[in-house]
Image (cartoon, rainbow, N blue to C red):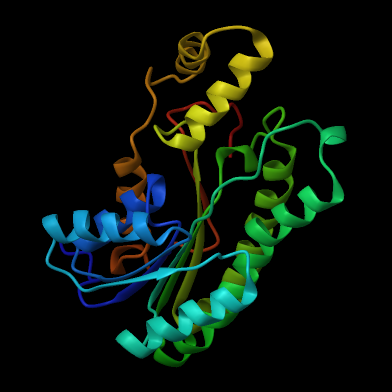
Length: 263
């Protein structure tokens, strides 16, 4: 099935590992040009080579911190210099540290705000004018299933990722007439270093083993397993395709049935 994104340029954040890397792999398989953005240049180089080993595509890597406004502008400028335009934006960043309300300082709240919410504002502001001018664009923001059902000890993520969903919904209505869609994906338990860090933190607090914590998580997932990163890549590839031109303003969970709500 042709998704219609061959030759389009996609900028993917947090692309050196985990969910961002899996999304990048999937878009490369569809023939998209890639701009891989992450903080660690060595990891970026390794990820670039892994993608090139499997796909014939054009890749630009940029070492940058997407919580930094100047790094965002530099990344967009470099991408435009190389490819001429950014047609697809996949905003993906690491999550803030876990903890309860009284454990987080003002500094922690500010870092989470800049990394999760303000970075989306800045990146969308940078890429939208070109998308609107060309009459086609796709923005997908990777959030979390906790925007629909807040999780204990993830208050920073719960608050700011929910704000991202409100931002995306509002923005989607403003730019729909320009052929630009804006959606969120809401992953649950995926086999990533972030999830295993959560297992470790919960194990230390409870005195249980990490294996026991993982088993407790699996028991809460109706499909009976942790999801694999490529499954999110498949969903994102569809949302940025021509096939999904009628889907905008949506927040789509992909969590194996963990959520209990109707929407």
